[in-house]
Image (cartoon, rainbow, N blue to C red; front, side):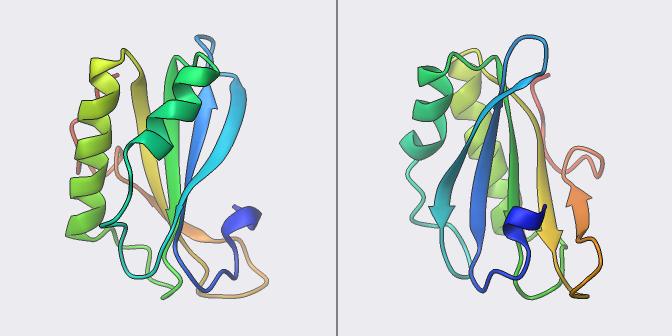
Length: 121
């Protein structure tokens, strides 16, 4: 969370986990502006494959201070889920974080909790 605080651009982080849900790595997959339309799917799946991840979790920030997931956030997550499913990598969740009050913990929304995507685990 603190890694994404007070950034002026969106950053998409991929957290890789082993079969016992222990974190085995993290990677900044993209740095963008308003959306990740230019995101290369390889930047997400390659690090997960190289560290033999059983699953991944995603997180990205909204510098606007509003953590409401956009339709593009949902579409991107569905694309990542589909790509990872072909590789037997579960996508556990995608968190959208926003820092609308500096000095206090960031707000976040879980796409899994909101049932906005079809997670495969």
